[in-house]
Amino acid sequence: MTDFDEQLIKSPEPSFKQLVEGTQFMVSMVQTGSGTEWSQKISEFEDFLGIGDEASRMV
Image 1 (cartoon, rainbow, N blue to C red):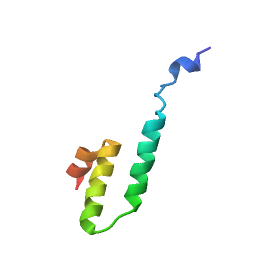
Image 2 (cartoon, helix red, strand yellow):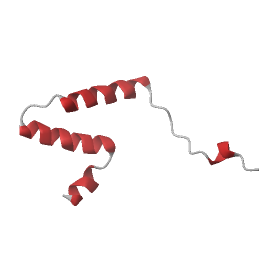
Image 3 (cartoon, rainbow, N blue to C red):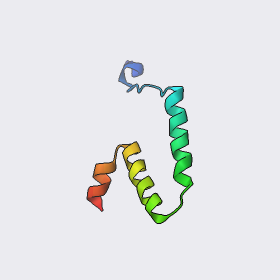
């Protein structure tokens, strides 16, 4: 029989600081002002997700 625990890909759990920073970032995402600010926040969000370059190439 296969040991399923060995097959699981374990990811590190985020630290409390990372969770707080992520929460603060997400809250700032919904508090938008002008269109320029929104565009900047989209760019920051793409970077946060690690997809900034790929998303820019798709547009």
